[in-house]
Length: 325
Image 1: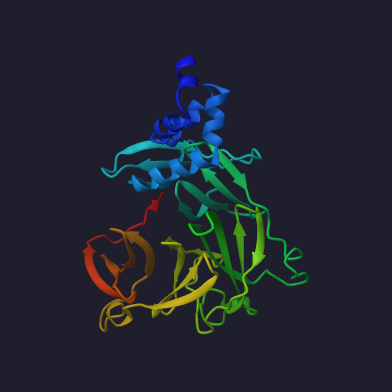
Image 2: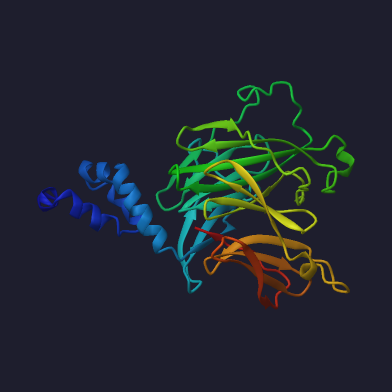
């Protein structure tokens, strides 16, 4: 311990920033010096940058002993870590209380608990730390009196490098007639709001959504989670003609055309699941048909214009996109 006390701060930062998060969590018990160092913003940033550059794992959710668990898989698909979800309010999850995963970024997992009341959490499985997010009360946003019972949410979670902040986005659609709730047609855009981890608060997004966007409705119709890639969130439209992006740094919406003619090939069965993900450092579109899943890649040219390229087919009737930590 005395030798550690004599080590230069820069050297300690360099050594400890190479350790896995789970090892750092155990190291906090070594001394007050180590605990303070791990909490230092400069060290946190250094460890974050190293972790992102060496990232090669994904996670999946499952039930064990009637308890919701998360497993981490390495690039050889071997289980490297198992985590039991523990929450700060002692409202832990059981087998009949499964979570809805919104997204993940740099080791942080964002999810909601199925059922009511609807609570949203940020969870670091390696450090064993969870945070319950404040509810976006409509009165705090100047929307008192609105009825949200027939709303549908597009949600997304990601890291904004420009502001060094984690953000949760909710894009809300309204449909007056709930008899046709499972039909994507008829949902009208209402508002967008964004949560900032830095300020621990919600605010309204001033920019407007493209009027012709029809969300791809989930079952049940409560929310659909987007994918974060390079500081933007992405969602597929219900007609599979384009996807919408939300830029976290400036709150702007943009649209990108999809290869709809190839996706909806004449004479072939319609795809029954379309997902966006990241693969091989590119934005990828996973189109699931009855007996196979086709992967498309969005390749960017030097002028910033993107084009879709067919990647490969996977002969599986079902392909679940893993959650990239």
